[in-house]
Length: 58
Image (cartoon, rainbow, N blue to C red; front, side, top):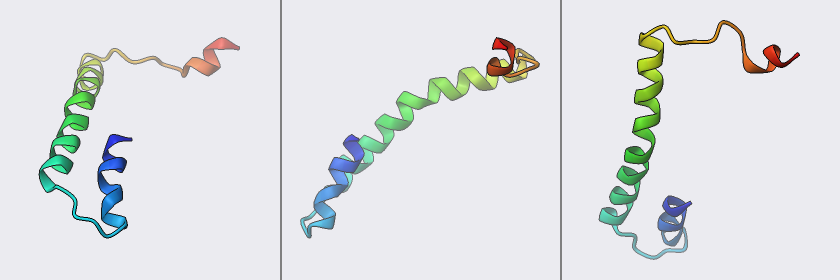
């Protein structure tokens, strides 16, 4: 959402700050990276479910 609000002035003809857009993008990547690293480690260790959660509920 913050990244969208950062890019919005560009659509209305105003200048956007490349540094702010870069900082926001890096912030999103830094927030999401631990999730993907944890999932990658689970897969490498073979820690996966044989069936999906929804089919296990039935």
